[in-house]
Amino acid sequence: MENNMIQLPESLDGKTILVAGAAGFIPHTLSEFYLKLGASVIGVDNFITGSRSNLDKLYPYKKFEFFEANIYEDLPDFKNRSIDYIFSLASPASPIDFEKIPLEIMRVNSEGTLNLLNLAREKGARFLEASTSEVYGDPEIHPQTEDYFGHVNPIGPRSCYDEAKRYAEALTMSYHRKYGVDTRIIRIFNTYGPGMRPNDGRVIPNFINQALTGQDITVYGDGSQTRSFCYVTDLVNAIHNVMFSDDPTPFNVGNPDEYTIKECAEEIITFLGSTSRIKYLPIGEDDPKRRRPSLGKLQSISNYKPQVSFREGIQKTAAYFRDLAQIQGRNDFKQPNL
Image (cartoon, rainbow, N blue to C red):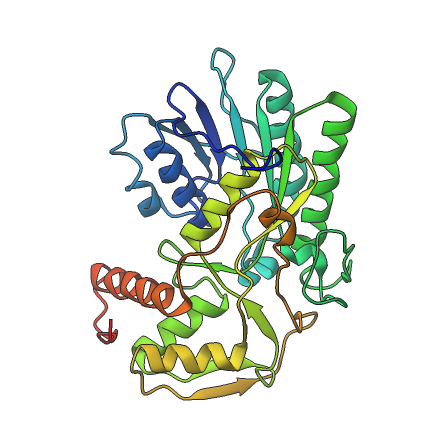
């Protein structure tokens, strides 16, 4: 292996990891990943968008501990605790949240990130800021590379998230430069999989739930805008690689396979054997026209490559939503062709 390649630990036994937002979709999957590597994991969440059911997978692990807290108000008391790694994953990230809780999104990414960085400084912990592809806005270059500064509307309906994440990145780099905090930054592209909220408002859960119930699949605009969809376990592997790299500057993480929104809807209808039809609605303001990560930077120092195909990921996600509907007593979900 080349000298600049990431050396991943085989075990994290004896290490303690703090995951902010642990009841969320990506964070609870990440937490289980590290519990399986032998780490002790401390989860923190205030359940503003996180699900208590996501924690049910974590409680059986003896090394998992959870605190209900709002990280932008006050962190739990970790005075006598050793913490080796901190993952800043607490921010709501769905379009439906931008209208409902914009100030909470801005506060968790500013004051909350500040609190976590201060904790990392105090504990000598490595800190990872989970940023987003939204920092690129409606990009003028394609695919997006980490050296692109973005094309963001600072006062648009998505700005509470876009600009808050841009600020969180700047804050993270400022702590790295001024205080020498050991920091990492990731920019997460569209991710899906079990553990998402059924009413998430994002493309994959919307389309799957509509397909499973035979409703019209609602596509905004003409469906020509593109996204790159990454299955959650692949994303966690990418995050793991970045955390154990030596580079404090941002890394794109995701899957480079690109689909138009219309293609995505058609694939889901086909995969699930649905009778749904596509219904076109007006597109939202500042909706990105194209979105695909360049993974060249990460792949130049790691062996990272997404493993889960779009079809396999859709089938696993559809099965999760179907089972969740049965638990909740709904009977309108149809058996997908899995």
